[in-house]
Length: 404
Image 1 (spheres, helix red, strand yellow):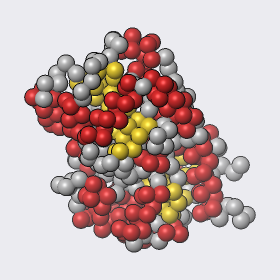
Image 2: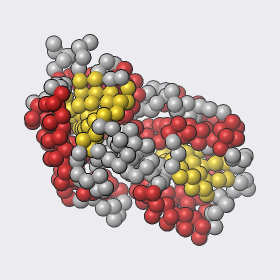
Image 3: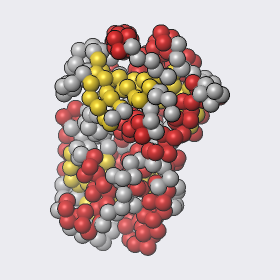
Image 4: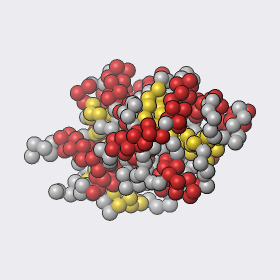
């Protein structure tokens, strides 16, 4: 295959930053793993990310074909909400890098709305196609939770990007439909390609061994993994933990949160203590990706009580480890979870349903076993290698390679 080079833009976050810290999360995993697999297919990938605190090198290699290029894009300490004004500076720095290296790119794949603005600019300068994956959308977040602050600038920018980009990759059919309904996006320029999972990392492990390694006893365990922010609905999980009426002991492990999310973490810890949950709920903090499979393996159930999830990577990682998922029926989660087979999708903001469902899975070992097996089988069809093949095929179509 010819040595094609792809440009990816992740302006506001770096894919090699640790997921779960600050605003890093599923998107970071998505970009890193997709790029790695595109490299396996033979593509060269340059990921352009804003220089950030801790980025010691201008260029860092993810693999022998994938590199992250750190470029200036505003002061290092600026919050994500203040970065809009630096997208032009960042785009100009990418162009200067490209000229200096005499590099030619087949196309641009941008991630998130800030990067989409940069991608549109680069597409005009280089005369190459532009694809965008938004990962989250302001209009969906605003509708999901009252008070969720999203600027009009972001909404207007998303609408502009959708009108200008050559192709949009949606993470689910639900997201595709919302782009059409809420933003007036052209349906024939949107392709739904679900997220993937690293099946070499997230796989079934022995529950007893995992619990021993983590210092856990024989109690039933509910697990939450993700950023600690209001949109993730952790408070509902505390309501569930406080209202369970069962004769056995159970614990709740909340994995995630760092210094950036400290205010919300502290609020939830105080709330948990006021609810009398200090012996039941443990705020574990941020955990390295390499350790997450042990937490999934140790849990009876993974709970995702979010107001909104564009896809729900945690659900897929949990299923790959054989842990059933009980989640809100929102966003892209129905794309991942097969209701009644690999877990349960429950009405939005309904603690009673969560309590009843979790109690049922806790008390029915054969149900949990069958769901665990179905979850692993479902996840096995959604590895990153399969996602990369679909996206490479889309790249080829967009760049006109299929007709050559």
